Structure formats: C-alpha cells, structure tokens
Image 1 (cartoon, helix red, strand yellow):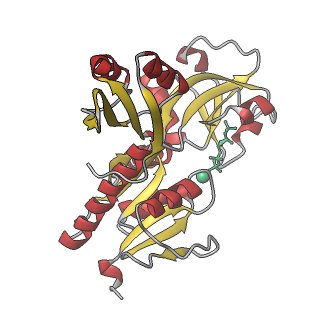
Image 2: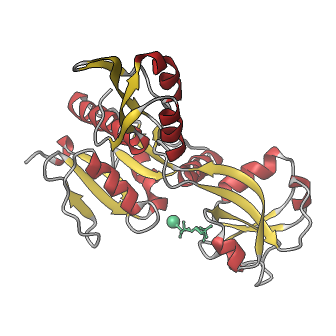
Length: 300
Ligand code: PRP
Ligand code: ZN
C-alpha cells in the first residue's frame, strides 16, 4: 500500500445535499471506495485516493491547511472562508480549480412576506441574521450600507419570527424553506454550485499527475451527462438540413448504405439532450430509422 504521502486525500461533505453527488461523481471517474458513510474515511480500493467525510464548513480549512489535497464543496462555503480569512488579515491557501455543475443554489436576502425592499439601501440600520457573516459584510460594505449582522449557525429562517432580525441572508435552493417560514427572497448575493478546490501546497509530480487524470475524467463524466449518440438514415439531398438540426454536434460521421446510393447513415454525438421535437424535425426533413443512445464515457 502507498504511504499516506503518496495518496490523495479528498474532503467531501459527510451528510448533506452534496454528499451523494460528490461520491457518485468520483465513482463514475472509476474510483471504487468502501462505502460506509459512518466512517470518517473511505479508502480507495483501486486508486491511491481516499475520501475524508467531514462537515462542509470545514472543507476549505482542511484544504487550505494542506490536511487534504482536494475538496468538493459549495462555492458559498469557499467564498465565506476566503473572505473570512481576508477579514482577519490572512489568506486562504487553496485555489478553486473546477466547477461541477451540481449543488446549484444561491445565497440570498429574504424578509417576511410583505416587507418593502427596494435595494440594498433598504437594509440601512436593519438587523440581518446569517451564517455567512463575511460574505454579507462584504456586500454591505460594497453598497455602503450600515446594518447589524446577527450570527446564527443554523435555522436562520427562524430569526425574524423570534424578533432577532428584520432580514435573513441564507442559502436558497428550491425556496421551500423560505416559503414554509413566511419569508420572501428579495435579493441574491451569490450564485453557488459545487466546486473542486486544491491546496496551494505543491503536490509533487506523481500526485499532480493523478489529480490531472481525475480532472480529465470529471470533465468526461460531466460532458456525457447530457450527451447522446444519434444514428439515422438520411437522403443525400437532405444532408445539409439534417446536419443543422442535430443539436450541439460536431462533424457527424456520414457512411454509405449498402446497395442504396441515395441514402446515407449519419452518426453524431450531440452534446445536449435530444428532445422528441428534434427527432420529429429530423424526420420531417427526411430522416428515417432514428436511434438515440446514451453515452457512457467520453474522452476528448
Ligand atoms: C440550506 C439553508 C436552508 C435550506 C434551503 O441548508 O440553510 O435551510 O438549505 O433550501 P431550500 O430552498 O431547498 O428549502 P442546508 O441544507 O445546506 O444545511 P446546512 O446549512 O446545515 O449546511
Ligand atoms: Zn453546512
């Protein structure tokens, strides 16, 4: 077995909205791990990669302090840590290297239904409850607004009801939590999604090569999520029109059909979903024998 120095440690959220996606994504990159979520570490069986299951708020710190080489965490947490360290006069020692296109949510301001909000100036002299003190501070400074931030480590939505705040600043995904608490989103501070961060400490050639390989595979996994392989027969005369109808495809492969000079077979990878309307349009343009297949792996 490799020594810990040779293995890559990836910090992943222990329980929460990013956990399953993060592990699933790494598995689709070919990593096989022992899967118990009760353990703090999932050891990679076929690659020198281990997953550390931790609180998401701890991930930027662990990567910054070089305890972990990589982390998968929401941009909201990354930004809060980065700005928090800046406010203390120090610097985050991680770099953001990849956006993962899942875990989309936003950090928003919300107020009780019926509150009149007409822009940041409405926050003047108000109290705002949040766990995102650093991001909120920066926002208030940027807009030159004087407001009091009230720190809540969780259940921020309850603050207005308790009379502790006029506004809250918290994550919104579906909006269900706000609605359930009679709150209304009034402004967005940050659009967030899951990202990969890497320590700024040098990894060494072997580790860096492995990180690069994982990133290339991640790229492939993300690309195939929407991609489809489409096959059809087309009259030669309709080829130009049919090419234009293929969504997000590069040069398709065009092949002769045995014993048929008028028709060709067209195969193309479409990097977007192929909808029924597209198939119907292709058919109307003269295409027949249409087949759409999912793409499992892709390497550019
Ligand atoms: C966030 C946020 C809200 C909820 C909003 O918490 O604090 O409570 O999600 O989601 P919705 O708009 O879909 O209702 P999260 O689940 O991230 O937990 P955490 O803050 O404890 O990490
Ligand atoms: Zn959290």
